[in-house]
Image 1: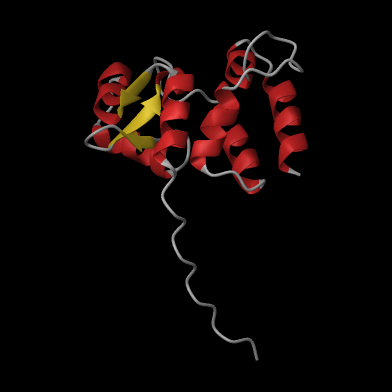
Image 2 (image 1 turned 180 degrees about the vertical axis):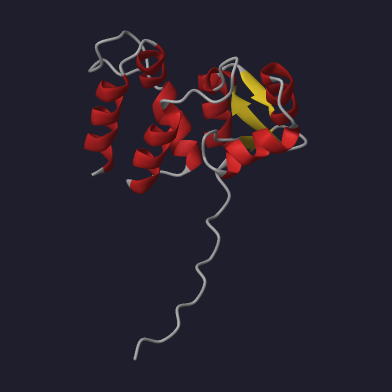
Length: 137
């Protein structure tokens, strides 16, 4: 008989200096209300995108407002190529802060100059996911 599992402890909060490093790396951030207005959808829809991991958030600043990298959002909503990439990296053990950092950190191994996010925006989803897979597994 297998003993009941104990709930795992919540991960420790990220180091504020790490958070600030990622905030600076990403540059442009937006909020849930701003995404709702930009995409013409209710706040609940944007919250659902976050819950479904179509968008990732990071809390920072004095009030700790949940913020989304602005480049994660198109005019219609979340960039469609991100969800699978988020899943792949999370399955490899990365937390949201690490996923965001990886997507915005320049990588010379990509066909496109810049970071994986630049490559995704340029249409190189498969290449980015291959790089993510190498890191994750």
